[in-house]
Amino acid sequence: MNRKEFLKELRRELEAFSFEEREAAIAYYEEYLDEAGPENEAAAIQGFGSPRTIAAGIQAEQVIKAVNIPPKTPKEGFRKVWLVILAIFAVPVGFPLAIAGAAIIFSLFIAIASVIFAFGITAIALVGAGIFSLIASFSLVVSAPATFLFYLGSGIAATGLGILFTMLTYFLATRLLGGFAKLLGKVLNRRKRGA
Image 1 (cartoon, rainbow, N blue to C red):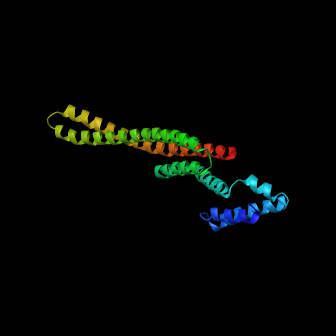
Image 2 (cartoon, rainbow, N blue to C red; image 1 turned 45 degrees about the vertical axis):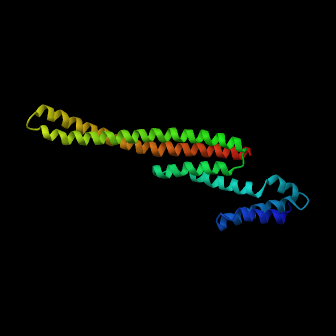
Image 3 (tube, one colour; image 1 turned 90 degrees about the horizontal axis):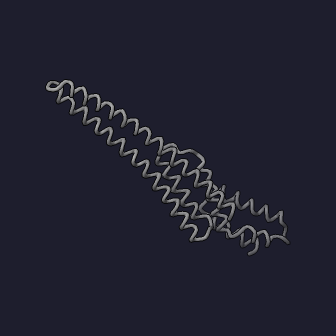
């Protein structure tokens, strides 16, 4: 592949990127080839790898930059995790290794999501039980004042714990998913450098 073919193919592979990103990448490789000179052009082009590999690497770098920004919401954390998983498949690795890596990543993601889900269900159950206990306690005001106070206190405590678990669920969702996305970004970055 000569210089003209390489740059044409690279431009085609970078069509999904913004104009500025595409032109910056093309300019970088043109400058590199200018510095290599006509006699070393073929070796430099072969050293770059395929234009598809270059485009996948640029896309992976964009994902890594996006992952390093902590998520503000759990939804954003989930989105970042999926972006990193998709980026891992964009980086050229052996297909069996990619499937094994994806299975491990998916298992970790499911484990983290299960913990967050369990905390969320616990929060909902506590708030529901607390509200039910509060409502039920008012039927005992006249007939059993001591039992009324017990149910009233239990309802307030359960509702408070439920609110605490809700806040803990939100905290875990943002922190764990953000940390998981950063970990995947580091793995992707390390794999990209090794490729």
